[in-house]
Length: 557
Image 1 (cartoon, rainbow, N blue to C red):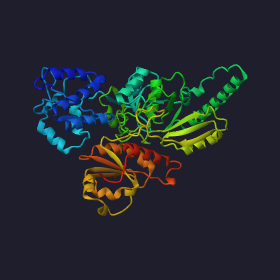
Image 2 (cartoon, one colour):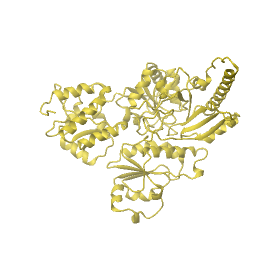
Image 3 (tube, rainbow, N blue to C red):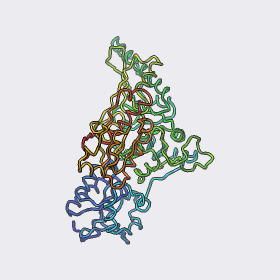
Image 4 (cartoon, helix red, strand yellow):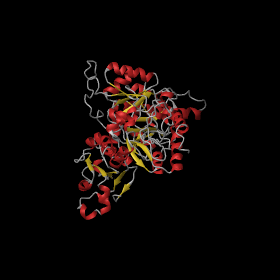
């Protein structure tokens, strides 16, 4: 590029960034620009922090961590009447601006006060985590916090019916909600989260009857065919459908409202975009009073994944949602706002702490009937994602309804790529990940020993720049060498660990100087995996595993 021309190039880039759908174009354009000039670029890392990185590394990082909302933008000064660049690098005229997806193409005036030396100083001392001091001055928010009072929720309900997005707390995590039967609204969720269409959404309702209406088993049977063989097959199909419907009714009555999502064959009216074209739809009924009040106010089923950028750590506070989706057109229901209103719902959280009591996503169970089975067992109920509801609890509910003889209940949690169309969310190998590289420490390094005898100088150096997130004191002996350390539950209480795991993973991103996060590989004893609340220890293990992309190391490196 001709870097002496300060008008043509910025005009081109400014026009590209005016619409969010051209983000891929500007990413590619900036990558080419960085390679062509061989200059260092100043980048926006995780929305707010600044750091100078080599140009090629910058854009490799941008591509690899795009799911984590690590958007890196390099541009020349805007061609405006009063250009106000943050920083211009010598010999290149490259300038940093943060993503302006609110279509306001004039950068905030407060940005112009930054100098090159100031950014250099910041980059040498700060990590890739958000810089709290810069949030208000450097980022024009589009998202809006609203209270959880009844008048406010009525407005949110109207917003959902009109096809717009609302984020709300549940007993598990914050959800990003839309009208579940409005395909354009559903697409907005995928766009806001930068989520692949291969990852389906969960539909949220308040009544079991509303859930049953979403599944094919509750619909009327096709007319019986002619002929003895055809009649026999139709009768078998009808019996399977009746058993499936009984199982769905039993499980919804037993666990709704609560942290269980059921996946079953979808009614023909359900949009394919909700289901990743699998023909199976996921549904649950949240127990959180705000979520239930919002669904009632919307008067439509709400499809809602977690309210974060895809692959990033799930949110359990309104602040987490604003950190990830602050640039999106979304209202965020915050129960800490407006609680002085007499119309506020009872039971809503009144402070700024986590409002999601369980703290991890719901258990996901898929019901699938065996159409070719000649045995008494007619179907399988498979746990696809671990949460607060255990497979044993599901077996017990079926036994009480005299249905246990018809089903095999098992666990089959998978680790897939983003290219695989899944019937349930939370299956990708990299999920719940902080924006700092995360690794699991193998069980062989978790024994209690004198770390001075085992750690070489290289490992000591790495640990001095690393955050350790522990569970049950497995890595406690490394605490003196770590930059920062937290234990989710020294007593190995899975309920406590689950309620704080996502907040702790997000905390690790804010530790100045952190270059890595280490978590323990959880090798569980049999008695740790049975019953309630021990089902949550499997959820904690799953979240830590996916946060580290299932990478286990035995050396701090």
